[in-house]
Length: 132
Ligand code: 5GP
Image (cartoon, rainbow, N blue to C red; front, side, top):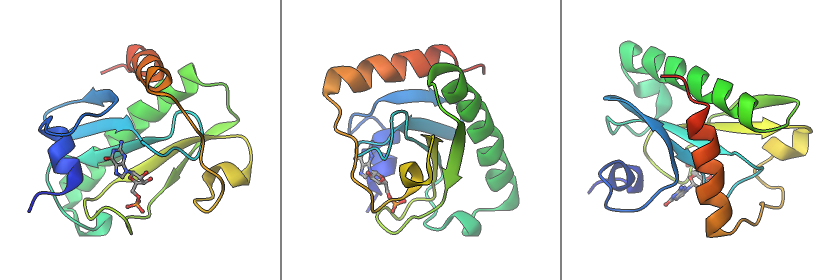
């Protein structure tokens, strides 16, 4: 069975897309730790990040780098943090989270409540700052 992220890539489940190319896809996390919390995934479905082949892994990091630069341009923050968890969705991904304090990257902290229109607007803004 396809992962929920593969369904997102195929457009079977909607997402607030930031950017994509032939191999990678970036979109806003639906339950953000902080404003701009973004997931960056390979289109190839592999459960664990460190089970990716080296080329896909390096490509994912290069793509995540460009997404992080777009986040920095869009969101007023101290820096963009990056985390790997993967306990919920078995499709390799990294979390990019604009942070000001350590609690912004703590997954047990209270989540940020955002309305659909806020997600749409934010995804557009970040996307505009993404340099492919
Ligand atoms: P992890 O697998 O790294 O523990 O967490 C998966 C992340 O994916 C969580 O932060 C969760 O909010 C996010 N997530 C789960 N399902 C969806 C979804 O359908 N759409 C989006 N945009 N994010 C999701």
